[in-house]
Structures are given as C-alpha cells and as structure tokens.
Length: 287
Ligand SMILES: CCCCCCC/C=C/C(=O)SCCNC(=O)CCNC(=O)[C@H](O)C(C)(C)COP(=O)(O)OP(=O)(O)OC[C@H]1O[C@@H](n2cnc3c(N)ncnc32)[C@H](O)[C@@H]1OP(=O)(O)O
Ligand SMILES: NC(=O)C1=CN([C@@H]2O[C@H](COP(=O)(O)OP(=O)(O)OC[C@H]3O[C@@H](n4cnc5c(N)ncnc54)[C@H](OP(=O)(O)O)[C@@H]3O)[C@@H](O)[C@H]2O)C=CC1
Image (cartoon, rainbow, N blue to C red; front, side, top):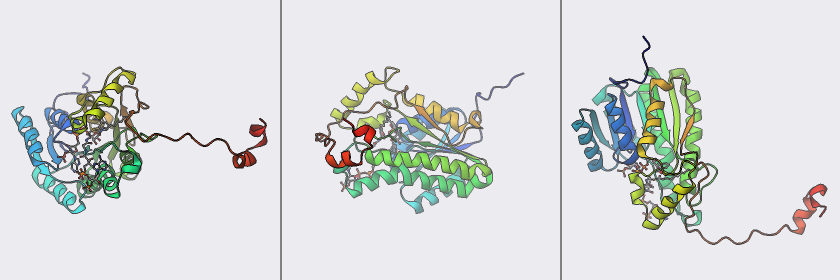
C-alpha cells in the first residue's frame, strides 16, 4: 500500500524553532507545525506575544515553549539555542522568519536605521543558522528555511531590507552547499504582498498603497499568512528531501509589483551629451 509523505504527525518527535513566532506568518507557521506534531520553540522580542501563541497551541493540544530573544545579539542567540536543546533535546528545523523594515527612501535612512534593518534581516538569520548548525545540525542533519522577500532587483522605499534579503538569498545558497555533506538542507521562501498582521504596524497611507497593489497581482489579491506557512512547512518536511539552495516565491506571480510610496520627485535624467557621443560606438552615434 502506498504511504503518502503528507500525513498526520509528519513532525512528531521533531523540534522546530520559529523566529518571529509571536505574530503574523511566524505565528501561523508555529500553529501549522504544532498541528503536525512538532515541539515548537517560539522566538521573538516580546514575551507577551510569544506566550499568547504558546497558550493558543497548548489549547489545541500542541507543544510549544517561549524563548524571548533579540536575534541580533550573538551571545544571547547562542545561549537561547542551548536552552532550546535543554528543553526539547534536539533541533530538526529552523524557520528564520523574524524580520521587517520601515519603508523609507535611501536618502532618509540613518546608519542606525540601516543597521537595525540589516542586522534583523541578514545578520540575525546568520547567527541563528550558525548556532543551530554548530550545536546540533552538523552532527544530526536538519532543515533551515529563511524568509526573504523578492526585492533583489530593487524596490523603492525598501533599500535596506532589499539589500539584506538579497544577502540572505546568497547566504541560503552558500549554506546549502557548505552544509549538504552534513545532511542540512537550506532553502528560502520569498513572500510577495501578504495581508499579514505585520502590516498593521505600517502607517495608514502605506497600508492603503499596499491594498491598491492587490489589483496588480496576477492572481488578483494579496496573499494569506497560511499560504506562506504552507510553503515553509513543505520545505522543512521530508517531502522536500531533495530540495536545497532554492528560493520559493509565494507571490501570486507578482515578482515585479512595486509600491508607489511617496518618494522625492525625480529630476529628469541628463540628456545624451557630447562626452558620451565621443565614446559611443559609431554604429549607435550616426544620428
Ligand atoms: C513582489 C515582492 C514584494 C515584497 C514585499 C515585501 C513587503 C514586506 C512586508 C513586511 O515585511 S510586513 C511586516 C514586517 N514587520 C515589520 O516591518 C515590523 C515593523 N518594523 C520594525 O519593527 C523595524 O523596522 C525593525 C528594524 C524590524 C525593528 O528594529 P528596531 O526595533 O531596532 O527599530 P527601531 O528602534 O524602531 O528603529 C531603529 C532606528 O531605525 C531608524 N528608523 C526607524 N523608523 C524610521 C523611519 N520611518 N524612517 C527613517 N528611519 C527610521 C531610526 O534611526 C531608529 O533609530 P532612532 O530613532 O532610535 O535613532
Ligand atoms: N507580510 C508581507 O507582505 C511580507 C513579509 N515578509 C517577511 O516575512 C516575515 C514575517 O512577517 P510578518 O508576519 O508579515 O510580520 P510581523 O511583523 O508580524 O513579523 C515579524 C516578527 O519578527 C519579530 N522580530 C522582529 N525583529 C526581531 C528581532 N530583532 N529579534 C527577534 N524577533 C524579531 C517580531 O516580533 P517582536 O517585535 O516581538 O520581536 C515579529 O513577530 C518578516 O521577515 C517579513 O519581513 C516578506 C515579504 C512580504
């Protein structure tokens, strides 16, 4: 009889860390994993949000524990990964989901703001992955899923975050290569425009801009948190046992839908001048 890989208890006896597990896509992913039998380690800065999700999971009969942490701090990251191991005895999966940004034009981003975003979306994911690898996965295998966003060809207002996400895609591909001999798979999920609770933090005019983007998405709407979680869970699971180094877009076929945030007015681009004409190949310069 054929036994499908997709079955109840798919994650029974497994432990998965979900960063940013106290809200939005992370919360939804934590619920999905717990419903499939995983012990879930919830990470985020706000202990109350984590505790709410832990209690929701417990009420559904699942298993979760809270580990308040700012993923940008190396010492606390290592200490927290150690505490997850003490609590659950193993780490089979890591979902590097914690992240975010404040939409702002590049010229308005201070060094402090740039570093806050890049450390959240790139450095923190690296620290978490490295700690899980060194403390457990190098010896026992595992699966890591990094949440990014498809902004690597540029996105107005998201320069800090886009640079970090592009870096995270490269990190994903490099870690997949370096850690393959240890049976550690590393993939990324790139959500498009998702109607998540994370968007609640954006100012009203930006939320309005995002709502209007729905019409430009080929599938005709914003995505749902659960639609991103389903992709994350697939990549974590044995169903993806030959998938590593991939970035899976979950965006309704909308990699190029860019927001029209209020940005400084552009000056017209300079015209083709004499200097350029002098160095332009003859065939192009004839007229
Ligand atoms: C087709 C593909 C589509 C892809 C679409 C992608 C769309 C993405 C959507 C999402 O990601 S939705 C939800 C994600 N959640 C959030 O974004 C949460 C909100 N953001 C944050 O919490 C922060 O941005 C953070 C960096 C993630 C958290 O860092 P931290 O708490 O350390 O930040 P702050 O203390 O608030 O600020 C630090 C520093 O940053 C500067 N700054 C903050 N806001 C602005 C701003 N609006 N403009 C310019 N600079 C800003 C500022 O210098 C702060 O320093 P000080 O004020 O303390 O000097
Ligand atoms: N919604 C969307 O359209 C898209 C979202 N994404 C990305 O998906 C991920 C989830 O987003 P979403 O659920 O929408 O938004 P949320 O804001 O709900 O989720 C972000 C989570 O990250 C946590 N977090 C932020 N900074 C840190 C930190 N330094 N250390 C630990 N935890 C941190 C937050 O918790 P706390 O504040 O308590 O620390 C929060 O729970 C993010 O990386 C986001 O950028 C990507 C593309 C599109």
